[in-house]
Length: 170
Ligand SMILES: C[S@@+](CC[C@H](N)C(=O)[O-])C[C@H]1O[C@@H](n2cnc3c(N)ncnc32)[C@H](O)[C@@H]1O
Image (cartoon, rainbow, N blue to C red; front, side, top):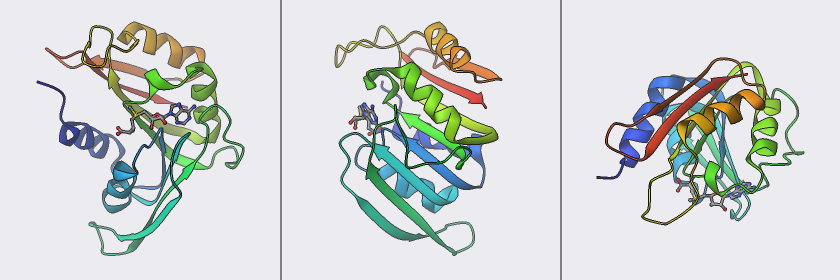
């Protein structure tokens, strides 16, 4: 059984709580960004090398206040639109393995996080054969996060699945 999107979202909500701003790296169709704006952040921004530009106002499920969901085209390896320390948190789901230079992307994500900002990664691990892609092992992800300069790094594999959750602080 694959790890359900609901489980991924629940991990994200538990880890982030409520923040002002969150970045979704490799956001795809913007679904998670909308969810993040409803549940986690006043402002959720997604970037994806192939994304359509989507900007929507949504209502926070916490307090009924307006929140922003914004997805735009951008390269995680070079996020010049965002200044240093722009985001409280960042997430990346099913995307790390697809980024051509993950070290460059992780360094950029770290740069745009505030001090103590949190990065959460959810991705397949080596051994997942459904799409026959070149996934990372948990140990590789741990090393990559340290190499990019992240401090407290935790990587856990989901029991019985070729899937991992990683968290790291700037
Ligand atoms: C498997 S999809 C996952 C999309 C979405 N996060 C989801 O869970 O449905 C991986 C995404 O990473 C994006 N991507 C690949 N390289 C990227 C890069 N350098 N910068 C930003 N996004 C990138 C792809 O365009 C693709 O939409």
